[in-house]
Image (cartoon, rainbow, N blue to C red):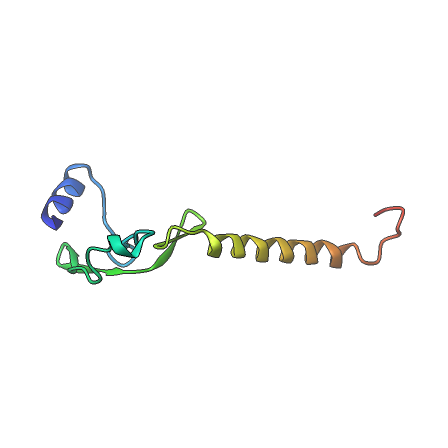
Length: 98
């Protein structure tokens, strides 16, 4: 499998960064449908990729449990930070200006 991936990346002039690339196995919602709990190592160009339970992709957190709770928590934290910045900047303004 990794040989094919390397060959295709060479053919399309695509570079693979094995330090930034990861593997993720999505768990099924029902425990009775779990096939394996451990998976073989995935190698690309002689370097093995690490398995992770979540990672950040294009600003969103993707988790193996198919839930977006971590991403929602991150967005709520950012909203509170931005609100506090606005409140601090306009704290000394007149109420009519607010």
